[in-house]
Image (cartoon, rainbow, N blue to C red):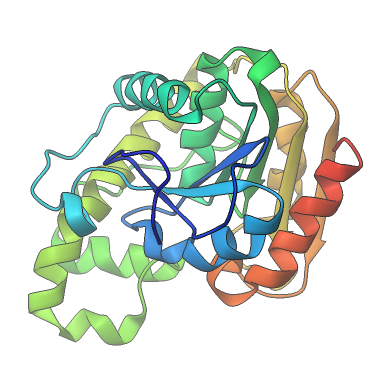
Length: 253
């Protein structure tokens, strides 16, 4: 992947020419842009598509991790506004990345956000989940495996876990504390943008009702799209996911 503008936050899929609209893909907890790379490639015919690289992973492994949603979303909104160079944007978030994308959308001018697309994640504030980010390593990583973020066979690779665990814990804390606060407040501010909520029909980590609950988080058009497959649609079904995104946005969500 390469970029047409320099940024440590965004890594773009290779493409020719400057597209009218830019798309930013927020990966799941603990992940880097490699997990959304193929989706960005698939969408490169319609958008300048960029994966979002948070601190503490890949080439930003030494950067301090972010654990406070409001602070991260403020930074991302500013970086994204500069990076998009005045173009309208589509924000795509997968799993925990959906919550980050939603908070960034709240901070942008609604007229600049063509759509918010969320994938495989309950609507923030729609359910209570006890925090797991502070659990001892074995318990925490078992939860990560259950949530679909880490293959179980990697639990025996201590060297790799030493690398990936800090970003995973940071992202879990980021989203768990944020969503618990929303649930306890009993109110979530909607965004004024078209929203598409996508899930895999074989995904056992999220219920259809939790996907439908995203409708309360937007005052714009809302659509639910179900696809064949499980939880990790950007990696397992990138072509089908890209086609669903293009179709939904072409129809105005």
